[in-house]
Picture 1 (cartoon, helix red, strand yellow):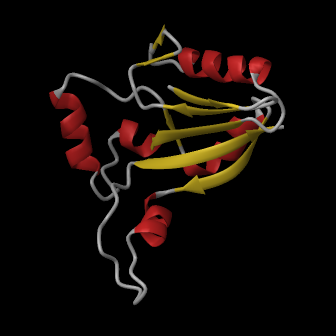
Picture 2: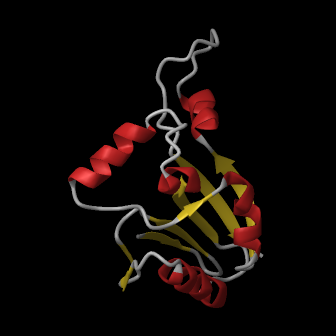
Length: 139
């Protein structure tokens, strides 16, 4: 976890690791809920939270996204598993439940457009479709 502190707000980057704030992931969202409840209680107005999430379709094994099968194999090889996922349409509701407002939601297509598309419009690299990056602001 990485935090940037200001006098009245924090910016918190939640990493995609097996433990967040010392709470072990147990697969039923309890750690995710506890983390976001803590942010709701402790973060000042206008604090920012930046995190990535894996799409729920990956947890279901739909195998419809670019890079999904390879990413699943890589995670399995290191004996890890994804335990928390969201559908892109759930993100705003999920954030609102914890007093957060969506500021930016960049899926693979958006990341490709922003960072891997040349001035001529040519795509120079693909981005794994399993994840998205969210920036939210405390209301």
